Structures are given as C-alpha cells and as structure tokens.
Length: 176
Image 1 (cartoon, rainbow, N blue to C red):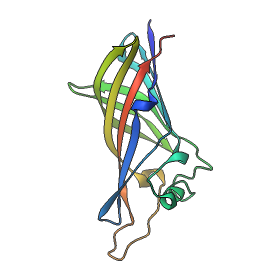
Image 2 (cartoon, helix red, strand yellow):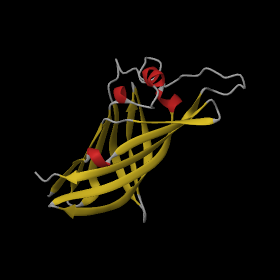
Image 3 (cartoon, rainbow, N blue to C red):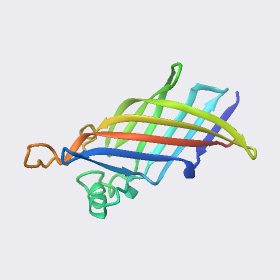
Image 4 (cartoon, rainbow, N blue to C red):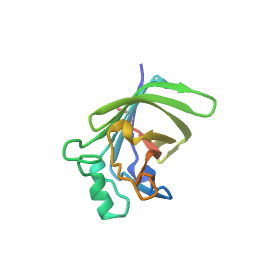
C-alpha cells in the first residue's frame, strides 16, 4: 500500500467568500490563514482523506469595523471557536469533477455537506509535484448560528443568508 501526503501550497491557494449586504450590494472577504492536508492511498482518490482548517480570527473584508464584528460573539465568536473545520468522508467522481462529502464544523455546529471540486491539473517542476483544485459552493449562515439579522427600512436583512465560497487550492506532494 502506497500513501501520498499532500500539503497546502499557501502562496497559490485562497478561500474567498461573498454575501449580500443591504439587499443591493455584495461584500467580499477572504480567510488568509488556513491549512489543507490530503492523503491518497494507492493512487485512488476514493481511498483518500482531506482535512481543511480555517482560522476565522484573521478574516478580512477590507473594513476593520466589519472584520471586528465578524469575529465577535455574534458571528464567528473566535474567543470560543478558533477553527472552522472540514473533514472529508467520501469522494465521488464524475466525468468533469469530484463531489466531496464531509463534515463542516463552524462554531459548535457540524453539518454534512457535499461540494463540487474541479481538478485543474498536476505538474512537476524542480522535482516538486503540485496538483490544483477549485470549488465553488454556497452555505446558509443560519445553519451554523451565524445569526446577525437586523432589518433595513425596506424590510430586507442587512446580511444575506447565503454565503458563496470560492476555494482555490494547490497542494504539494510530500512523500514520506
């Protein structure tokens, strides 16, 4: 049995999110600190596992006031919950993409989600093997008790419920 270990290439990876703000605009932000570890057995991705850990304390939207609110007890509550964690449970492969099923934990709530993952390619330069992937999916912030809900005059919420995530990951093969 041959195991491959893949670690995050931080310089070529990102997690970006966007959410409706005041009904008419969109706020974008990103998580600059996160880790991804992947293991593949016998070159079979179905026998593999992926773990992603995001550190919400460092979330940024280019607005200090909003960033401070995001890490407050009302939303991410980073004093109590330092990590957002995804652990894979199953891979399914279609002609063009993978479907990665796993447990997403935000704060003290864990939900099973399935996300599409597109394999962008693999190459080897200077004896370093890299593989790149991307995924775009939506979660509902209410599912994870991220419940900031004041209303604006028109009756809409200040912050939309759907959070779109765009994950771009390059992994480096670390043979042990």
